[in-house]
Length: 341
Length: 143
Image (cartoon, rainbow over all chains, first blue to last red; front, side, top):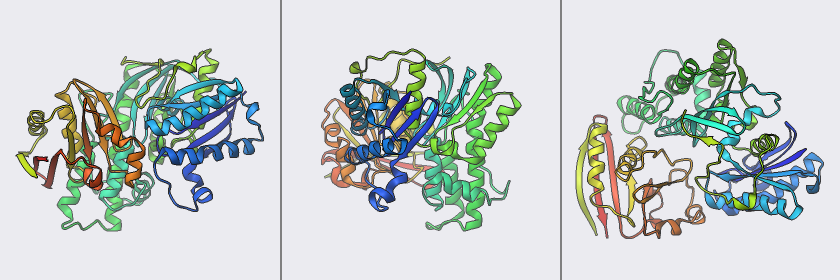
């Protein structure tokens, strides 16, 4: 079975084709800038999505060696996201599916991340304790099955990825913040500086605003008149920040493991590309004898392969969707997301 | 014309919460509130406390999403221009539809990045956090 996935919820235009669990092709616009735009970053707009979408669909079919008629299911992100951006991918996908008489699946973007570690895997052991960490989301959830997800907690202020970007900006480490901080942190001295780890009343929630402010205070106290730290000092700050951010992310995970039984542990979203965070999850999984589900780097940021795999899991679960009833929506929630445990 | 409605000092989250309940006395549906202040000044935190006054307890940072929408006593649109590269991006995502929604209150962080898009009649909240122990928060009305 072939599934074509389309993702246009925010910055990235992405198209993927999967055959069962296997990704045949996964194209993401930002990685094709040079090819499409000669290196110029296009603006964040529905027009940019529109310009990129059909070339990407044609390119993905060509790469997979398929015709559009060979596709069995088309899936597109219905939200959350920017309405103009969502409408481009969603309405294009729905129209292609309808005109060819194929099944169409509206997919929740966050659920796409949650199940992205299932790419290329068979026979997942539920329940899965899942942490989704990206620029816009930080969510701890329990995946009971493809059609039952419980949210345990989420960020009360900034998302983890946003904290990486903003701290990198405050300290002059560059953009994007994730790789910049990881790179500096790898050269830092352990224990030279330390930043607090948020301690919250709700043990499953996250907070990164205080950590961001702690770094700001450190800069204000040690560097006057807009001066920035030197390279060695940046490394120590990056390491201290990364340690604190990772502890803030794994404490709720450890708390959940104490209180509930799980068979798998999963980590996904853009921040899941952080090597130290991946190592921490690997250690926790080994210690608790859990199956570990972390997507390859390629599927951590926004991508269409995760939208396609999500549609596959729903289809395999026998979910029938009357897609003509659905519209893309900025705060789209699916019926599979349940309230707190 | 710029009129200063009040200036307050905040040295704690509970001070900021009190200031939020003061801000609410001035604004109403149709109001546009521009927030200005450096990274870590507490713009999102203030919007969070103001929104609680309207029954919305789930405000988180809109930096990546660009805009978050909430339904409380009133509809709230919470924008952040931090990631916006040019005015066209905002116009493309329906900026004028949002700011012409008479039933909503709009909060916009980093509004000073694109002054041309800010309504002529609006409120400004300036947060100065040069001193680690104290933030100075000013509410202004622009007409």
